[in-house]
Length: 140
Image (tube, rainbow, N blue to C red; front, side, top):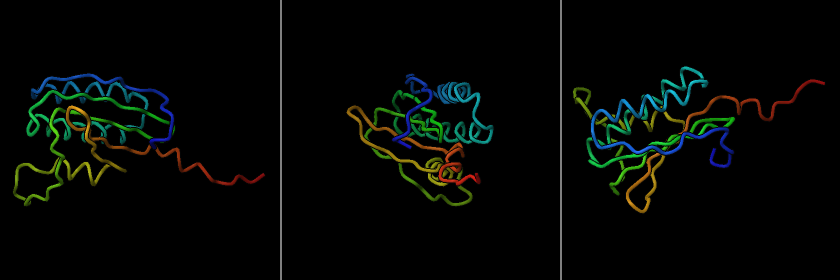
């Protein structure tokens, strides 16, 4: 999706390293996604909650959130000030935490992380389904 030109973008916004920022950033993303299908909006909200929770719990730094909507999908990015990459863990069924990045890796169409000058960027992409129309031949 990186080659797709954004139809619209949610400019980066910074949030302090506090629990309330998880909810505020999630609501900001949900408001931005007012016109995408509800299932995609809810999934994006869940995944951004998981990523921002990880920042608060593990990175202990402020974070930023931005997003792009293209004709084919959604890309969401969360950047923080810690260079340690996120780990996909497989906790025991009785564990109370440790599933955030696992959820992102299993539920997003694609995801990844990259180093940035002052920390790391974690991103995920979700399809909006419109790309299925490409390549279909119409009867004339």
